[in-house]
Amino acid sequence: ARLYLDRIDANRDLNVFLDVRPEVTLKQAAAADALIAAGNAGPLAGIPIAHKDIFVTRDFASTAASKMLEGYMSPFDATVVEQLAAAGMVTLGKINCDEFAMGSSNENSAYGPTLNPWDKKAVPGGSSGGSSACVAARLAPVASATDTGGSIREPASFAGVTGVKPTYGRPSRWGMIAFASSLDTAGLMTATAEDAALVFNAMLGHDPKDSTSLDRPREDYTRALANPVKGLRIGVPKEFFGEGLSPDVEARVREALKQYEALGAELVEISLPVSALGIPVYYVVSSAEASSNLSRFDGVRYGHRSAKAGDLLEMYKASRSEGFGAEPKRRIMIGTYVLSHGYYDAYYIKAQQVRRLIADEFQRAFTQCDLIAGPVAPTVAFDIGAKSSDPVAMYKSDLYTVPGSLAGVPSMSLPVGFGDGGRPVGLQLIANHLDEARMLGAAHQFQ
Ligand code: GLN
View 1 (spheres, rainbow, N blue to C red):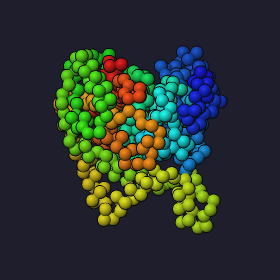
View 2: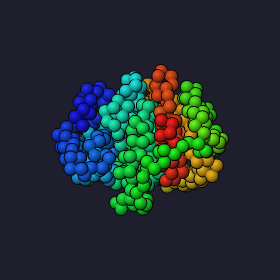
View 3: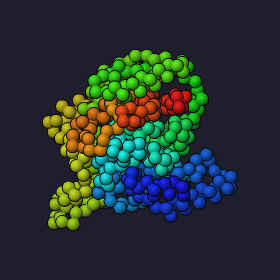
View 4: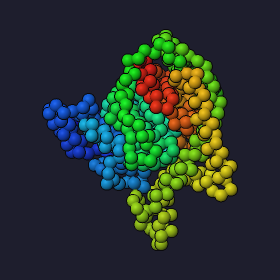
């Protein structure tokens, strides 16, 4: 832990960490050492982890990278944090992200953008850009992350690390600051799929505190790591190779698919036509849920309270105007609009119907193949500032990741090389519900 704390200190210019408390970390490390010395330790004891600042923690501030929660100390730990601590993992601190996990570049953080360690002019992706930069710069061997529409996979691709989103409902959402509750999924950034499998063993299980947590026994996510790829049917959706995909990304992804073929996999062309509508569906559904979830930040219960207000209504307005940044405000407005009387049926209900069709088309695809593979994002990491004034251009980064989110299926990014400017490229693997062990195995065989 000491080694990582020193590295974190030496790499402050990357703006990865929002809260570091060496005395807390070293105390946890000493406790893990004692367990190891007593011969009582599991495989994760003493291994450091950094948590995305969307997971609440008792010993570090929890801000969701928003001014709204500046300095907020939670009275409890998120279940994910608690489970990993119980396995002996040592918390290095809290890491940057887009405000309330809304974004694709980490530029929406109220605490400034995180830089991409491969090229400090580039974004590290988002919203889990702190997590991807953290693992890429080896400021931690593992970082937690969350994915609502691509926020684990896109930053993993941009920073050349492994990023895994499990099946919706498999990880607990308890203590994860909510963005869009029907999509929010906790996951990990690691150096390899094997590392992710080992940490998932401690992290994924039923949580009675989360009503959408799947009531299933724990599994061993390492069980398929040694399985050969031979005979695996990999579906390649033709819609993932259309307009907008940049040639350097396409070249790396096609090479990776060839490599799978060389390992004995069979490539099957599939079609996901409704998934092409993923972006509008995602931004309607996620903004609707966000507008509801963010209503709890009213200046009364927790978070920022304006000093200026006279009466209650003024206090709500001023606290929310001052506390939220531009992107959460945009989502609240979109969400409130699509849920309002007269627009609900036209937008929200329609989006829910298309969402169902997308989920159905994934189920059909998985009768033709075992895994789906394609690009994670249309481009490599872009320059800081390149898209920050154009929200719609930014939303298009999520083209290939939102369909899997809407369907609730597990999905990951694994690094497969470098594109323009020497910036990393990821390959996206998507598996059927609860088939993450097979997906991690296929990634491990590649790596
Ligand atoms: N980029 C998407 C958004 O801004 C995804 C975010 C996420 O997955 N948390 O909503």
